Image (cartoon, helix red, strand yellow):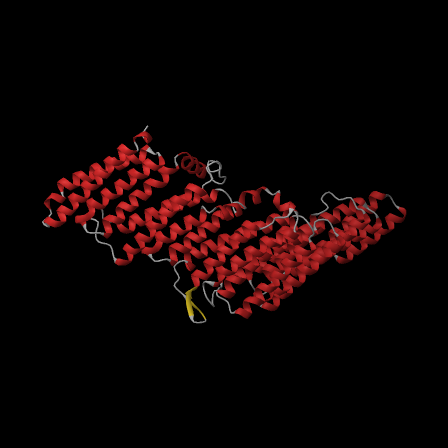
Length: 591
């Protein structure tokens, strides 16, 4: 067969010199067919399928090169299609070899055959591009070259060699593709790099945990390869893909390297990576900018999952000099700092016009507030939580802080105030209506909380911006809350305080004096209604007085202590007389 092929090629060469064109074309096709038949007949002797396919690919590329040199368009197209078919067969044979998993030497040999085949196809692409040969699908050989590189380095090569071999081979092809720009090769190598990372991540996940040095030996080549893609790709999607691969490599690296030291460290590292990715957007453009923003948010999401599963339930302590604090507290403070970094971050012109940034950036305020609330909930003991919530509410409505952040902070302050009142009620009157006696700490915390909540209500009369409160921005429910508070501030702030005072009185004092104390509170509410010209307060006070009188007749009459009973009756009577005098004195205010 080889001799017949040589004879046919010689006849074709002679026909090209002096015979008709169709005869030269026919002799060339016959010769190529006989050469392929001769090679395929060696299959019983060459048991290695990828090696035989590589030889066929080499012969097809030689035929194509000869056809291009002699300027034969039909033979060039035939050689191109034969080369593409041979490349596909070589890739399929490589997949078969990967499934069989022979000895390491055979795997390296097959990987070498596939890599050489990819290099020959890339070189042919450069030749065709320089000669300006017209082909039906110019990028096909470049795509096949990328596929051969992916199969050879990612699937066929021994597992211990894959990361380093991928860096060397794919890096070389990437540099060559950027320099000579053969059609399709850059896209093919880009896809191969993405497949290499995906396979590497799956392998690392399946066989975790890893010793640190071995893990670095696997991850570091992938990281360098992603960095090389980012640097050489220029602007566009390939640079964005390189950054995404680099970001995932970094996220997985901190997980697998830091978790053996402490399970809390990966979450803290993800917070730092998020801040770094956001800061890196100052020097990026286009798709890379979007990828960096997406990586920053992905790191935050990873931290959130880690906090819920690992960090939040942890009680691990960290020694700082003579102090011992929870590691969770330090991580929560770091999370708040990262949120503040996002809120105050000065975006570049490209990032500032990005719709995703416009949607995300305002949410950093809510993230900071959520972090502070989680910190208070986890680090403050239960009796003192109402005090902490009320202090936070006072801070949120402070005008200086509102000018620094946003007006919706005051709406959040009102909501946190309601939360403080609700927490106080739950803590003191969870077994209503029996009102069990609270502990000393709970009584003290309740009195402090009531004092701070009173200060909050008074501060809101001066600090709340009633004009801007109905349109605070942010989520739609905030406008609903802000509008109602702006219209009826006294009611939305006063009524929760009255209920809290009543519960604190019930839980902290003798039940025999409860009627007198509640009557005094009703008197104070009535007086407040007169001062503020708020008829709703006066009506509430009158209802409270009526309930106190019923309690006086139904419960206090049955008390065994005659002196205490007399004290309650006299005290209630005096308060009612004072209320009657108050009504006559300020009758003009009742309208």
